[in-house]
Amino acid sequence: MSPMPTTEDLTAGPPPGLLAELLAEWTALLHRCAATTDPEPYGRELLRRWSEPQRRYHTPGHLHAVLRHVDDLAGHAGDPDTVRLAAWFHDAVYRPDRSENEERSAALAVRALTAAGLPAVRVAEVERLVLLTVDHHPEPGDRDGEVLCDADLAVLGGAPEAYAAYAAAVRAEYAFVPEPDFRAGRAAILRQLLALPALYRTPAAHARFDAPARANLTAELDSL
Image (cartoon, rainbow, N blue to C red; front, side):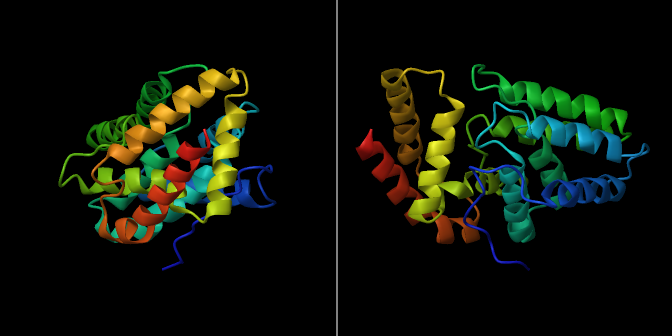
């Protein structure tokens, strides 16, 4: 098992080889899931989406980090490959000026995975998991949902400098929002996260990330 990563490359373009690595992972994943079509062309389309110019945080680097966290938490999941599919699609549609990104991403997953020939029950589960990332609040006992949500929120529990890079990248994605409005909106999100009884649901992620995440969130809130 690889070490659970705590940082993401949030400021530069994809490092050499990352897109090829991700494409190979996607292709292998779809073959394991019994796709009936060649998965490589659609993998390239997904990576094109993840590389769109409006993205500063929701990039191939974020996708790669979430997949690595899913790998490390896979022992908690009921169906790790379905969680991996959901990770691929959870921010596949991302426009910071829109509020329905998760819903559009879930709909894209349904269309793409159905066209790839995956069973309807798995496609429906991927759709459900992607929609969980609207509020990151899986029901107790939803082990696959817990893994996906913890993997997506792991960046909050990184080292302070990594968290600062994450926060700066999020601000860059919302550069079109005036500073007072951004501060007010961001503060509301941070307070909502801090009010959660548990930021992380899997034992491994809770033990590793909860305390540093709360410290990071509190420090950013104090700076606004």
